[in-house]
Every structure is written in structure tokens, then in C-alpha cells.
Image (tube, rainbow, N blue to C red; front, side):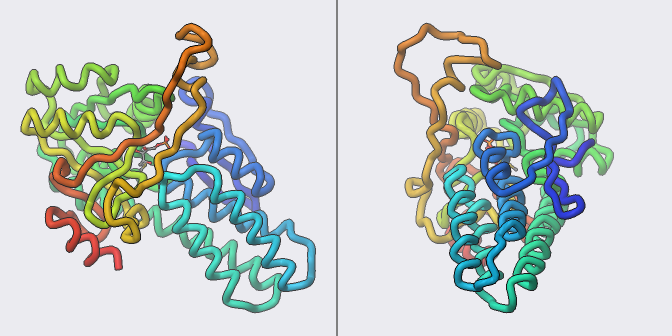
Length: 342
Ligand code: MRU
């Protein structure tokens, strides 16, 4: 499978996720503005992958700064970081990655040294995500029994993490342990990450997949055709409330009603202890055209009001466990999250 993000000869190459599954198009991002646009337009997407892309974007931006004056260099680098920070507001991995890069720039040294150190840090952030997603997947696979039917939403796989995957990583690891699985994937309107990306990824892995529309989830749960739900996360507040792709909350409520365990899989880079609850998580509002159009074809009359929140918040009491690379944690989340994320 082509890599979601690759740093090649001091350039960034991504697999353009907006073109999947029709085309496996690789795109070279030559500068930080290209990276910011690719994140905004969701050609690279998914919380951990956004963080990794932003880190490389900062490294790219630094290479293009020509000044020899250290103060001026930092000022221009700050502008690069600002641009990347305004791409998407919900995934905290973006801001964590930017902060880590900012610390490198603040350490000092001459400009060529800082430029080198920024590339090294971006590579390190990428490598850490690969290792964290692999580890959490292995831990999470213990929750999966042979023969399970697992429902997942959006895409929380290699594409979304630039690593092994979170929700899909757990599924892949359970499959590697020899467990037979059936994966039910919700299409995930408006941008169809489930239908376009998760089915594509699972097909590449040889894992059986059944695609359903978002509105079919309750039917399958009520029919006892789902053994557990696993999703990823864009931000986890200190009390365990989780922001994830719009529709996640609906699935969590349905799962509780039907006595089905609802799991969240995420690296610790997705935890934001600075927010006491999910109510404080900024929710991205995207272009109304994503709702009124599918792949450029209008499906609603013009001149109507449209809402397009890209994420929702699932309160922690709906979540049976949060799977991280530092362990599987359960209530009381407020204590467990503090233990693993500080
Ligand atoms: O808008 P997207 O496609 O970037 O949203 C992605 C999700 O909501 C994922 O579930 C989340 O980022 C976890 S990715 C491992």
C-alpha cells in the first residue's frame, strides 16, 4: 500500500486521499503553503497524519527562509507555524506537533543547525506515531475475539495516521493474530471516508468488509449483528470526552442502548489535558458544498441553509475503554488519562 506521507530527499510526498479510491495519486508538496492547503482540502487527513504533515511542513518552510538574521528567521518561521495552525481546528495532534517544532526552533544554534534539527524532529514525530499506533493496535487486539463483527466509522487506518492505524490498526493486529473478523464500515457522510478510504484500506489488507450507510447502524446493532464498535479520535479531553468524526456520538448512543462495547483507539498525542471536558473542544465547520454535493454533483436544491460540523463529541460515559500505546484505560478517565499523558 502506498504510504500516506513520505519524506523523500528533503521533500514531502503524500498519497492524495481526495482521489481515493478512483486513483492512487501521489502528490509532491514543495513548500509549507502546499502542505497547509493539502491539510485544509483533506488530501491528507486524520488526526495523527495531520500532525505529522504539519511537522514536515514546518521543516519545509524553514528550508525556504533565506535570511541570515536569527531573529528574522524565527519571525518568518513563526508565520509558517501560524499558517499551518489555522488549517483545521479540531485534531489536537496538529497543535502538539507545532508546539514540539516550536521548542526546537527556540533552543538556539545557528540557522543551518536549526533547519537540520527541524527536519530531524519532524522525522521523529512521524516515527513516534508509527510506533505508537503499532503498539496500541497490539494492545487493543486483546479486546477482539475470534469471529467478531466490528463496526467502525470514518477512516482511522494507515491513511489517517501515517503509521499503522488506530481503530483499523486494532482490527489489523487482531487479524494478524489469526482471528476471523467481519468489519462493518459506515460510509461517513459528507466526505465518505468510510466508503472511499476504509473499504479501500481493508481490501488491500484482505480483511472482509461490509459497507453500510450511516443510517443503517442502528438496524444492525438491534439485529445483534455487531459485537463492538471501534473508532479513532481527534481530541480527547481530560475527562475522557472524545471528539471524532461527525456521527460518532450517534453510534456511541446506539451502542450503549444495545449493550455493545464502544471503544476509542488513539495515540497519546491525541490527548489534550488542557481541556477539562469535550464542551471546550473546537469543532470545525466546513464548506456547505460538502453537504449539498457529492463528488461535485449537486444533491440538494440551491439557496438552502446547510450545517456542516465535521466532528462531534462523545461523552466519556459512553466509552467502554480508550486504547492507547501506554495501555487500555477505563473509568475513571480523569485519573487514568492524567497518569498516562503527563
Ligand atoms: O475529517 P477527517 O477525515 O480528518 O476526520 C478523521 C477522523 O475523524 C478520524 O476518526 C480521526 O482523525 C482518527 S484518525 C486515526
